[in-house]
Each structure stands twice: as C-alpha cells, then as structure tokens.
Image (spheres, rainbow, N blue to C red):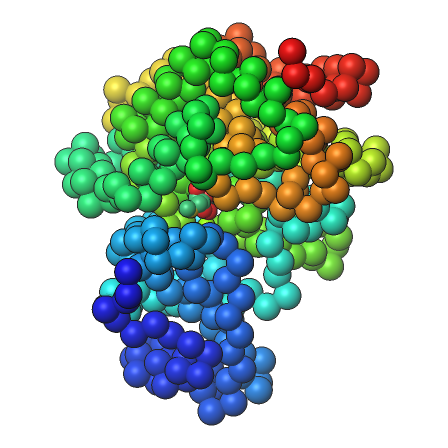
Length: 412
Ligand code: SR1
Ligand code: MG
C-alpha cells in the first residue's frame, strides 16, 4: 500500500527537522549527517548527528510491515501507541528510556534522543559481552510501568479511559498470530532448518501444549492489567558499558503497547534470555558468561518484585492488601514463565526470528533451537508447578544435558 504521507529520506530530514517547532535547536541542521539504521521488522529509523556532536533519532512508521513489504499493510498509527508507551515510561522511569521529544501524527514520526555509542543488547549478548545490571533495570522498568498505569495506582475511571485509548488491535493481532497460533500449524510465515522438523512435529502434536498455549493467548487477549510494552525483547533494549564496568540500559520501541498482562513483558524478556543461553551453550562461551546469563531472569524478576513491593506502599486503595500482593506476584511469575515459553517458540518456528539463533551455523542452529523449543514447551506446560524463575532455570539445565547426551529427535 503506497503511503499517503511524506516518507522521509536522509536527504529530506534536515528540512523536516526545520519544519518542526518542537525539534528546534536540538541539532544544527546545516551540518547534519543522517543515516537510516532501521534493522527491525517494521519501521524506518534515522540517526542524525551534527558537526558539534548533537544528535536526534527519528523513527517513522511505514504503512506496511517492512520485513515483508507492501503486501502486508499495517497502520502507521502505531506511532501513537509508541508515543503513549514513551509518555507513560517518561513518567514512571524517565531514566530508563531515551529522552522523548514528541510525535508528528501527520507524518507518523517519533523523535527521541540519539543514544550515541549505545548498542542493541541482543548483538552484545550474541558477542559474549557482560553488561552487569541491565537485567535488573528491565525489572524496574516493567514494575513501574505496570504499577503506575494500573488500578493499583489509579482511579478505576482513569484506568478504563486509558485502556480504551490504548487499544492497539492491529499490533495485537500480529502478536496473537505470530506468537500464539502460527508456530503450531502449517503456515507460510513459518520456517526452520530440516533437522528441526521432527521436534516441531512433536510439538504440534502435543495436545497439552496446544491447550496451554491457548490459555496464554486467551490471557494476552483478555488480561488488561496495565499498560505494557508488549515487545520487550533484547532487541528493544540499548546498552552501554559504564566507566565502572557495569552496564546501563534504555528501553525503546513500545509500539505494541496496550493494556495487557504484566507477565507478558517479563515473559518476553525471559524468552529472549533463553535464546541467548542456547546460543552461548552451542558456541561454547566461557563459564563466567554462561553463569551470568543463567542469572539474568532471576535478576529481572528480583528487581521487578522489589520495585513492586516498594510501590505497593504507595497504593491509595485499601482493597489491595498485602496478602493480595503475595497472590498476585505468584500469578505474574507463572504468567511470565508461560509467556516466556511462547516467546521462545515463536522465534524458532515463526516469522521474525532472532540473530541469537539465526547467525549460528546450521548444525549448531538446530541444537540451539531444540534447546529453546524443549525448554519453552516445559515452561508453558509446567508453569503452575514451576512457579519460580529459579525452577524454570533448572529446566534449561536438564534440557541441555539431555540434548547433549542424546542428540536431536529423529524422524520416527
Ligand atoms: C511482522 S512484525 C514481526 C515482529 O516484529 C516486532 O518486533 C514484533 O516482535 C513482531 O512480532
Ligand atoms: Mg520492535
């Protein structure tokens, strides 16, 4: 579908910035260098830097899915959902997102700080870099976004208005199809290496798994707990190494934001840690790196829990008791493990794969993918019994031991 609005190019960006009063003075457009760097699935992303080193980043929604092309139209209004996600996080955790400069609703462009020198976390994980502390920042981000937009903090009338405003049906439909349905059926969007076929067939034949994935999809479609990021994978996080050797992180790309289950954000993070762990196993990273990776999910969860407990003290409504919190946290942990499994499986079988696995040589790819699929399947089916992130970590260890000892599933 052709755009009925101006699509920006590096050549037109200086004039565009000059035409936007809210962007005045951020950069000197007469010396601007502009590069289109979008490597995601949906949008154009322009990083711009002037001769003095001042920068700005512009993200423009195309009227279709970039990964597929014009054959898959997609509303460019998604930039409004992204703006909403940024605005909410700018209130709850301003230190964990880029500075947000506003949205141009006519040309579907979002403007934000250019994070010079920062890199996408997934790439750094792939290359074996340790950014200590970033996992905890993600727990802090999820807890604050969730609490501050939920009935735990806000009047119910406000929450209902915001839930309605934040409805994001086209983006949710992508997740509903790609995460919860297509991997489990024959579909043109799916692809995987031949060696994986017996594993995928076994997974599709597993009625129990299919039923539990259905439960997770139902929760995604109906569980309007809070405004969530809804695409919080390691490609939606930028990292930087601080002078003290620890990592800093910024969350980007909240265009899938809607009122959904809080465990979906944590699960997205866990599913992506799972892919990173599987890669680290097959490429033979150091014990130091693998041990650090193994602790990430717990670190994110612990920060989420601690931050939620801190925020709980500020709740205005006595309906929400201490005992309620204990039960709610257990439910969110189970949801996170289940959603983590769904997010792991979709990245192996469905559209929009991850470089953690895709950049591996074919034989290693099948092994890493099998580790992800088996771990994820157990997470989904056993999430009620596992309850804790620590227990879900143990599943990974036993799956790795089994795959290394017995190899891949063969055609029966
Ligand atoms: C068709 S869009 C594919 C994926 O890109 C985004 O990053 C989301 O993860 C979505 O599922
Ligand atoms: Mg994205």
